[in-house]
Structures are given as structure tokens and as C-alpha cells.
Image 1 (spheres, rainbow, N blue to C red):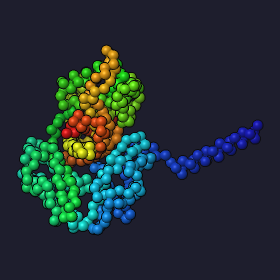
Image 2 (cartoon, rainbow, N blue to C red):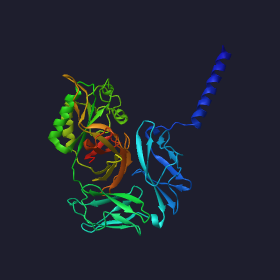
Image 3 (tube, rainbow, N blue to C red):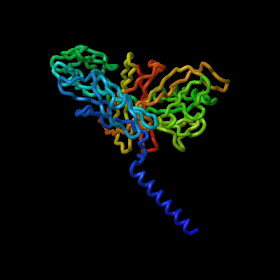
Image 4 (cartoon, rainbow, N blue to C red):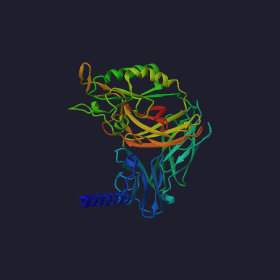
Length: 438
């Protein structure tokens, strides 16, 4: 018997050693499940310049390079996948969009641009300035974007830019022609050889223009009989507070699982935030996700919202959206800055919501086939946890994120909701803003 015990102990020791060796050879990276970044993008000897904040990659090639059939080698985050795949030839005469998908399903879209240094092919904006009021544009060559920053009260409807482009190139609209920069304006730079580059010029108003804005995440479901009542309460609160209260209906939990021809509004991010809390409807007031003690029944929403409204505004956010009707490519240009010293571990999450979607809903009166779903959360442009940011008083932090709107989304009913939250303070949201797609 003693011999058997000794043999058993030896086998356990051997198995332990084998397991330990396996772990050492292929360790599991805790926390990498949501990572969806391009780590390296290379074509032969040319390494791409990766700008993580704008999700862009710039490839610089010498004059005469044929970029119509390049085969990139791409490295991405652990456990993530990329489409188009690494090693697949692409035509880089126009920008190519790559989608990186993390293990948890969250996605990031990168715009990859090839630039050939050839005098006949040069088509860059070298400077973009406005004399009155004085402003020098910040040029992001990789993303083909120009950002203009103005003080509070500036009239954006009639600004005259002076534009310098590559030698021999031309720009349309022309330099010196007044434009309305209330919305982003596109400028096309045409090289001597006829190739073009399209820049998006966005004007931002600096300063605390919005005041403290509160986000109410209404966790709901199409088969939740009490959820329409909670949704109505949320709308009543919005009538009281106007644009100081942003609503987002997040479909998650067992009652969000559709049956038959009920709509399916569930998202991976929404499920992540909900974290199997329990039965809907519940809400999170200025919280990035539901946490113990912060899952509020709808009867508690009014007091929680009014209390949150009294808090000091510590962050200002501005959003300008650019939408291409032909490609359905949506780009959210987000600026944020701290209004006071912030010591927290901050993150920025950029969400897409869609309003006025007609679809079945269980109500207290039965199944309503023509129920209008409002402020439906459709997903994020930069993951459920967003991206880490550093905010310093009076210094702007800028980021651009893009996505292709699915064909069944109505761009006219879609909006971007962006919020900054403190990861070190129970995921507390510091400021939120909502901006229509167009």
C-alpha cells in the first residue's frame, strides 16, 4: 500500500512539472482578451508608422514604388485576428481599412495609407491657417485630417483658410475661399500625376461649453414586461434636464434574448457592462458598467440623476463626426481636456446609438408589434473598456475612431456618445457628450 502511495505521489509530481513546463512555454496573458491593436505593419523593409490614437498606419515608400499589389506582414495583439489577413496582397493606391477583432469580439478599425515620395505624386497639405481669428491647423498626415481649435464664441460659418500644398499640386476647395466649418469640410489635393488625397478638416470649439452632463445606461430587454415603463421614466427625466442627460438603452441579460421575430439588440460590450446582474430593468447613472451597489431600480433613477447633476464638471468633451454616404464609413473625431487636476486612471469610450427603431416589445398590455425603441446602444468604436487617456488641464487630447455602419442602420437616426470615466474610482463617468452622425 505504501508503495502505491509513493507511485501516486511521484505521478502527481511529474504531472505538476509537465503542467508547469507547459505554462512556461505558452503562458496565458491575463487581460489580453479585449486587446485589438496592430502592433506592427510592414511591407518588406518599410515599417508602417502606427498612430494608435487615430487608428492609422502610414507607409512611406521611395519614388517609383508600385503600391498596387503589396503584401503586408502584420502583427496584432495576442489572441486577436485581423481582416484582411496578414500576407494577403492589397492595392494601396487608395487607403485600405483593416479590422482587428479581439478574443472577446470587440473590434478596432485601422486606416492604412501608402505614401510614395515622388514629385509627380506629392499631394499633401503642408499648412492650413486662418488669419481671422488666428488659427494654425494641426495636420495628421497619416489620417489625412486637419484639426482647427477656436475659443468659445467663435463664428465658424465664414472662415477663410490659407492652404499650402505640395509643389505642383492643387487643392479643392481652393485656398482663400471662405467655408462654413460648422461641420467637417473635405479638401481634395490633386498631384501632378492626377492621384488625389482627401483631407477632412474639422473645427473644434475649446472651453467648457456644455456643463456637466449625466449618462443614464438603461439596461433593458425586448422580452422585459417592465422595461417600457422604465424607458418612459427615462424620457420624462430627459424632458426635465434636456441635453444635460444622455440616454442609452443597453439590451443585455436573459430578457434581451429574442424569440421568433423579436429584434436582437444585444452587443458584446453591453453584456460585458451588464455582467449578469439580474433582472431588468436596472440602470447605471454615470457608471461605465454595473457594479455592486450601483445597479439602480428605475424608482431610484430620478434621485440619482438629480444628485449627479450637482457634481462639478471636471472634463470637457467635443465631438465632430464625418460620414461618407457612399462607403458608410463613420469617423468620430473626439477631443477632451481636463478642467482641473485629475489623478485618476482615465479612459475614453466611444459608443454608437440608434434612435426610432420599430420592432416587437413585450409590454404590460401584451406584445406590441410596432414598439419604437429609442437610444438603442449598437456597440462601441473602441471597445467596451474604451482606451486609456491622459488628461492635463488646458491641453487637448484628440482621438479619431472609425467604423462602417451596417446596412440596416439608419445614419440619420444614429449618434455618437462619448464619455470619459475614472477606472480607479469604481468606473465613475466624469463627462458625456452626444453628437448626431449627421
